[in-house]
Amino acid sequence: MKYLDEYRDEKIAHGIVAELFRRATRPWVLMEICGGQTHTLVRYGIDEMLPAGIELVHGPGCPVCVTSLETIDKATDIASRPDVTLISYGDMLRVPGSRTDLLHVKAEGGDVRVVYSPTEALKFARANPHRKVVFFAVGFETTAPANAMAVWQAKREGLTNFSMLASHVLVPPAIRALLGSPRNRVQGFVGPGHVCTVMGYREYEELVREFRVPIVVGGFEPLDLLEAILMLVTQLEEGRVAVENQYVRSVTCDGNRLAQKILADVFEVCDRKWRGIGGIPESGLRLREEYAEFDADRIFGTEGVTADEPAECISAEVLQGLKKPTDCSAFGTRCTPENPLGAPMVSSEGACAAYYLYRRHVIAARQGS
Amino acid sequence: MCLAIPGKILSSAGHNGIRVGRVQFGGITRETCLDFVPEAAVGDYVMVHVGFAISRVDREEAERSYELLESMGLLQRELESDLEDWQADR
Image (cartoon, rainbow over all chains, first blue to last red):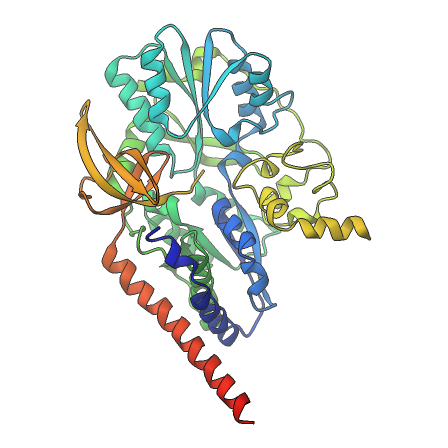
């Protein structure tokens, strides 16, 4: 597939790695933000190809993983109602809430459906006017415009049976929270390529000015990540600090103005609780007052229960890059994708799931010892 | 989910005031909303996320930056073959 396959070229990968070995003279701690980037790094063993001093820690860029426990509980509550069809992106289904998850609700008779696009949820609502259709809209800035379009269309068409349980999160405030933490060791970031495709990267320039840490906006294929890492190490070795764009085939400084416009028309910034990290001010999006009739939170009056994660789950530390999934005592034994203790093991972009898929030999070694 | 994949626009049409296209990804073709990329035409590649095109792939930028990557791969090949020659000569 064009613009994908050529970014997996092994010879070029070796060339970039060789260049990294030439340029890196000191240890550096880097973080990639997106779960999709984590998966590529682990799957292709990129983290193991790098010079020994370059450490990659995994960031919180997995929207499924950071959706708060309360929000999952709201979704399972709403989905359990007999007159509701809850429609969701697939990877939300097995994320554990404090009591249950959407898949179990479905198994017990709840009408829970999976879609690839919010367009399909709208189609379902139009075709089933007697069902209360609730779209579970989770995601970063990449997904928010598509979710916004769905609500915008629903309002334009005067649909009365469609609403949205929205839980969007924003990346720059999360980076700010990580950099502001006394436990932070990250010296450079691989920025979120598709979030920046939508939003551009001006917000990251502010972060760089304030915290003096380089950010290179990176893509998701092996060569993208290797090139982004090379660009970061080059800046660090030269003592430069800037935002650079590796993912030029998709990202521009201004981003996609039309997508940004619909975001601003439909949503407004709010405080948001991130599972594992806690509350981050002005880090979320909620529906504007003009769209109140489409806000499932208001319609269903859902009150979440604050509950603790299972004691063994270290997802909070994994999401902040303080621990690796393999540091967890439950990894691969009591916590697996079939029986997850926390969200990063369930989500297709979760760090724990990535390690489980591609690094299971580490579990075998531990069990053998 | 923040994965977007590149696909080629095969056709586009208006539907209820929204521009929708048939976009091809390898072997499969999917209906995709093109409202965020009015500049993208049939034959262009777009990055698609949850059924929405979020950017038009900049061909010139992609080619230019890929040439740099290729030169790193070529340099590495030369260095490796120099090394092999040197080892063979010994």
